[in-house]
Length: 94
Image (cartoon, rainbow, N blue to C red):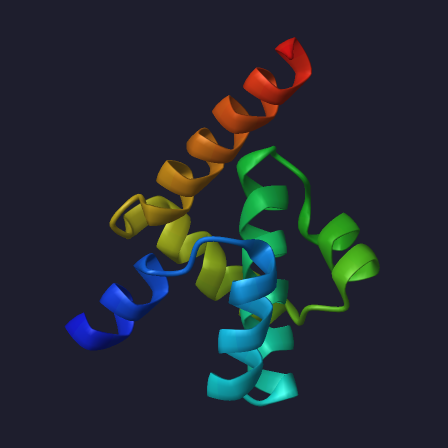
């Protein structure tokens, strides 16, 4: 696992991420991870399950699993969302 995470941390651009993850993962795996991330973001902004299902096509079981991670996990989603918000704010200021 350490090797995987160090490999990801070595990537410097979105283009490099596309290339690496397309080599590493199948299209369905990438879509599933992307969907979970979008679901987590929507849940963190207090969107309701019915809206999330309609916009993402995620099952209620997936939404429940993601919600459980948001509530009882390691706060990884919140860490990433906070950093992305900070980055977006800096970009808007420039």
